[in-house]
Length: 226
Image (cartoon, rainbow, N blue to C red):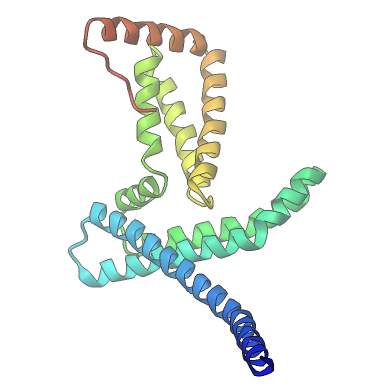
């Protein structure tokens, strides 16, 4: 009986020791898996951009590939190191601290565009920017042109200018949600501009919505991308 008790105790001790030793291994494996998943994700994003660029020069394509991968990783590292600082500075209303933190992000942004420009035409760089921000500039611009009637060439130019400013900021964000927040803020600026230049954006949206209801009733609804 005593021997049996000792055997069970020894087994329990061995199991508990194994579990304790196994925990770091599990955590390590989990970290490796997270990194592997991240690498696959940024490789997919990069492949999607390269497909849109259609680069026939394999050496140039390889350089752009490496530039994009390096930027994804650099942005992740920057946000990991600085997002908490930005939130703290924002809570304190310390605009100077916010500007100092963001200065390094601007540098990262400009270095990235400089490397892209060494291998791509201006139009191709625009393609990269659009792909990094899910084509939101074009989609939103078309929506404004459809929803707000009577836009002059100057109004359309201002809308596009503000959307492209949003894109410059959004392409450095750490997540799709953050990018959407940036575009939402700039859409507010666009609405303010339009309202100040004789348009009623809220009324335009209301009337557009009524038109969609009529189309839906007639069996031909069309909803522009938002």
